[in-house]
Amino acid sequence: MFGFGGGGPSKRELWLDRPDALDLLAKARAPADFKVAARDLIVDGFAIVRRAIAPELCQRVIADYYRYAEENAAYVAQNLDEAGREKRLVNFHLWSEAEMRVISDRRMMRLLDFLFGEKTCVYSTLTFKYGTQQPIHRDTPHFVTWPKSRFFGVWTALEDVHEDAGPLMYVKGGHRFEMEHERDIYRRVQENRQDMSYQEQIVHALDLYNGIVIHHSPGAGEVVTAPINRGDVAIWHPQLPHGGSPARDPSRSRWSVVHHAAPEAVQLHMMEQFFTHDGPQPPAPRYDFARKAHGRKVAASGVTAYM
Ligand SMILES: O=C(O)CCC(=O)C(=O)O
Image (tube, rainbow, N blue to C red; front, side):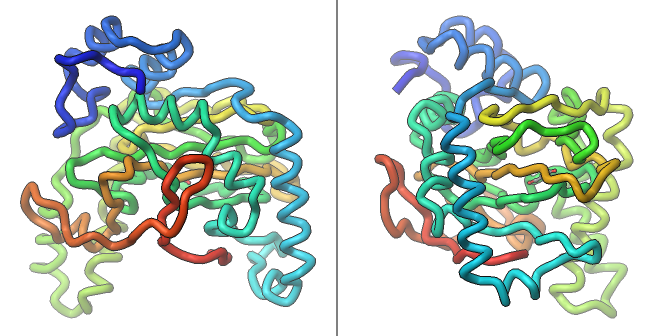
């Protein structure tokens, strides 16, 4: 594995988040393009690796999706949004060998190993036929780890992203702003909303958290859209505010797959733990690994389904 030699950073923190991250990077042993990606993540919270995935493989994922849709026509018809477009498909890599290949690409995985400083596994995926138009948000509540920030969103364009299709957007450098601690937000909800059930309180805490991210984002950095073409892979820091920009033409496709990447030694936890779990020790493990794909462990953490 590429890295830092004997005196490298400890695994207690993401080395990219250390105040001396750029010095560490200068000393690291890694290919030049890995270092560029690491630098962009340190400074901007966002990096693009151009032409990382072969165009033919991207096309095979789309062809697999059409085969899936044909074989599951009734299920697809039940999962359309108000505009009649398919919703996002979770864990399509468990159905499509081509998608599994995209997300476990050998070189991208080695880059992620370098960024985490430890071996990366395959966790879960979302496959999008259309732009998400999702408001600016941080992913941390949905993919929380102990130690913190052991997560990257890894987004592959399966086709060239047209500017009218709602390109990915993000707040440049926005991964650095501090906000009220999540357990303080939850405590406030517990105190003030005793009329709510536990689940409602968690969802309300998430709404407040997302509101704070949206409120702080404009002052934290420039909001930019990323020009991304087929086979390019974008990686974002877990704390980076990002989303899908509004689509001028929502009927235009924007084929893409996002892989939620974590080290195999660290479990990804969900928003209940994010708001309620205290202390340095992680909660009990949630999932096991069912198999390996291209030398990488694959989490047994769900099924292929629309969401
Ligand atoms: O693909 C997009 O438009 C946004 C995706 C996103 O925000 C996410 O997966 O967290």
